[in-house]
Length: 255
Image (cartoon, rainbow, N blue to C red; front, side):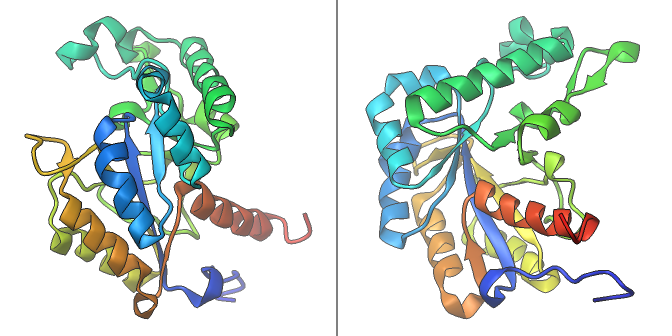
């Protein structure tokens, strides 16, 4: 207890937590990522959308069966229409009802095809609103209603498990990063007992953008799996559930 407040602790005496997450169900995640995760014995989180899952359904089903988390990333990946590729599917033109229908449709697809109902969600482009101007509305409350964790993108902090609003947990981009860059974030989490969620898209050496190198990814996996570093490496769902249970007990010590 600190000033009457319970002190958060990680399981098994760990000093911090790390989650590796990958967006958009890209083929390189299957081809280049899964062998690394198998060698290192780690579970990661994939934020998937139906169209790309359908392209390689058997492979995504195998990844889910191997224990990797399949999280919700909407059906159509709406972002701001300021991105030319999203102009026809712009968040500025969405309503809360429309985004909620899409979240639930994606959940149903993942449940029916991959065998589990998602408990975590990744905001497309890290954007958390629908509409524009005086009509703009946050859809964070919808995410809080339907998921344990809503993960952001390109944030600037690790998550404090005793304080974090799980509906908008911070996510750190790992595309293009070196091992030293990512270790720096991990060390920041270790220093404060925090949780760092990394985000990548493609996995490989031959992508011009939005990719993490396989050697960097494997180095991070091995660093986190080393018991001497005191890290809990697990899915966003697993870590988020631990934090949620602790936060619930703090609010109501006799649930």
